[in-house]
Amino acid sequence: MLATAERWILRGLEAILVILLAGMVVMVFGNVVLRYAFNSGIDLSEELSRYFFVWLTYIGAVVVMRENGHLGVDTLVGAIGPRGRLICMILSDAIILACCVMLLDGTWSQHEINATAVAPVTGLSMGYVYGVLYFAGIGVGLITLGRLIRALTGRLGPYELAEFAGDYSGNPSHNLKGHLE
Image (cartoon, rainbow, N blue to C red; front, side, top):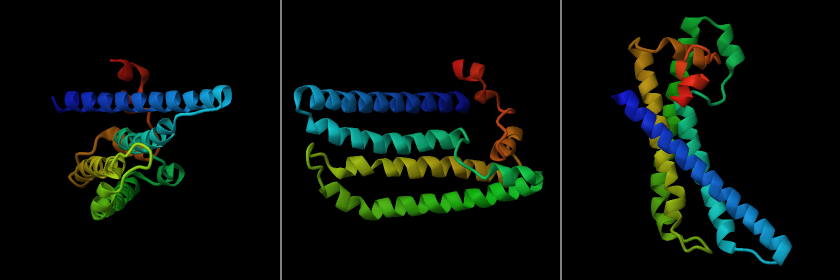
């Protein structure tokens, strides 16, 4: 049940990413055509495409975190044994959690300023733009916390430690068939 809900959430986030990217492409391409063909442009699209990019980046960070796709020092971690990998994973996850806490604290501290500031063209509250940091901090934090708890309690999936070292061959969700189902 949980795996099905998780799969739907990830697919929903991926759909949002596709919509944001498509919106960016349409707005930027449209502005380029208008600028060079008609010597005009739409200011709204320039500002919105930047905000779409911010949201795309942070929502994408959560999706990539769930898929264990962030950058890592695979050569170093792959060279040490399973016990060393586990220790590195626990330390890494503790640092990530600390960063998530700092991100959320900083976003909360800036919330009032961002909520009252408005974008110059759209008039949107900047709270909508930077509000994605709440989502990113909580999303990455929960994913990391779950993995850290599994690591500390010995319930880590056999493929998770391998993925931490850069080996993605053991997880069935990373093959093409797993993505099409």
